[in-house]
Image (tube, rainbow, N blue to C red; front, top):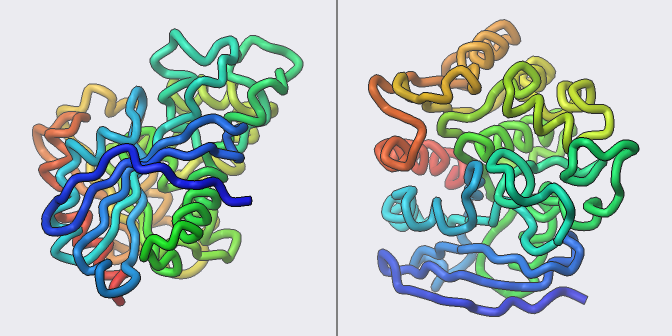
Length: 301
């Protein structure tokens, strides 16, 4: 039985609406899950394409919706935007709270093979029923939204994100191409973690979330490794700032080199260095319009 959506709040926004929903998530172990959904006025006349935004460390479903600056241009283009939360909430698992880089509020779109406590050996199975954000984002939310009769066309969807969520967007997109499902038409990211197996953020997450640690991470969740495996056309836009204090964690240059070495030209993969911009939402909102119009090229084709 499909869970019922409950409206938490709704506001008119650029002639469309921004609505927060809540439901019991089976994929997250029957915990309450929330998401924001922007619907343009075009949805009054039929189904619209959708762009999924994955936020970064310490964020939730509100950050992108409230501070990203995406909705004005999405309204003009007739594109819906789905803003999921970044983690399950309320699982009560040891190790999921108290670390800003790990556990609650940390968007790790990887199927869990161990619980949040990275010191638990062998892998603690207690978190496996809760930490399944990959299935929550890629399967459960589309199913829930379609079952509710909300006019979104999930045959026309793209994905984007910021920082850790940018890593999630890249790896979800690239894995869908490698698997041949081609679930998403395009992908973009703001300051994404491109080579997680080589930086502290990624190495910590992989060691804590994955039973085979870095080996499993490089095989399936490292964008720099994945882009080399993709055959055929890809559609990726990445922006990062020169004043980003986390630039040493991101490695966009390594991603770009891997893409070029694999035959993906500057039409398929664009990586832009933005002078003087940092890691936050002032940076994101400055280039939000570019990203919406980039995706519109593919979602409306």
